[in-house]
Amino acid sequence: MSTSPLLSTVNRQRLKVSTAIMRALAHPLRIRMLLYIDERESACVNDIFQALQIKQAVASQHLRVLRQVELVYTQRQGKFIFYAIQYDKIDIASRIAKKI
Image 1 (cartoon, rainbow, N blue to C red):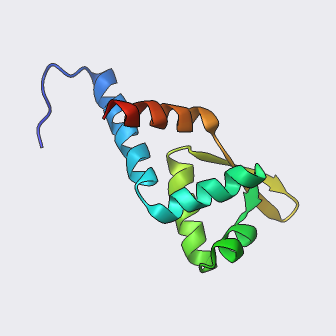
Image 2 (image 1 turned 30 degrees about the vertical axis):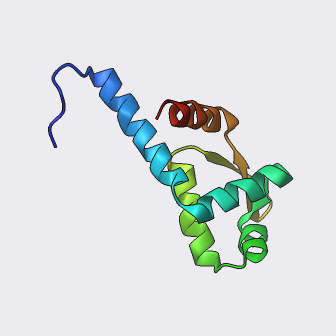
């Protein structure tokens, strides 16, 4: 796939980031995870996989995708890692979706 020479490096990078965010949000389970985290302000992987009735490994894989595109961030509390939403990234994704 070739890109237009008119696209600046900055615009290509923005497009790449936007595409990654949209791909992360395209999976229904990741949307359910975000809704679950949002309702609680933060949640650990144990709470998430039990509430959504999925395997722990599945929850961890999907949380990794959300973390990679910075839709969630982590906070360690003792031996548990809690996930919270990066609302500024969600806002950006929402604005992008409205333009599509």
